[in-house]
Image (cartoon, rainbow, N blue to C red; front, side):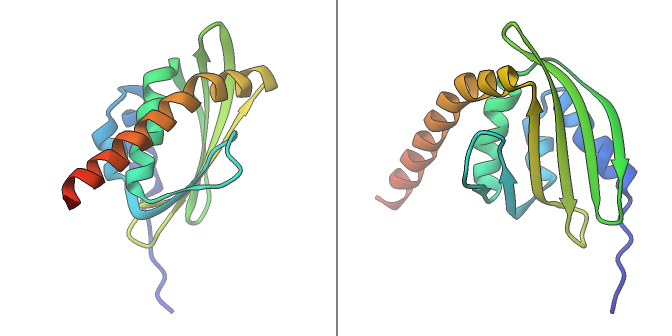
Length: 145
């Protein structure tokens, strides 16, 4: 069995910097092509880096005053704790990030609190994600014709 050493601090720094500077390309480049992203307001996960791009575009466009306040590290995962604002709602969030053997993000579980913050997340980000997937589907259709 091969044990892979992943430099968590580098991955954590890259993800933190991408979110804090709203660098979508850096964030998407950290994702495995087969990433699975669990949202706090969707009962099914988002699958693949294209879906991750849609979701994170909406998130980066919506969060205000975003800042990480803590990082916890495990053998192949990170927990990133953050504060942000959506409209007039202050939220606290937790991103559990799992890494594949190459150090790419292959799974994200996002949680936010309080409930009113989760509702604001759903109300504001939801329509942006729907629109993003519609554009993605339109782009795919135009490439096949």
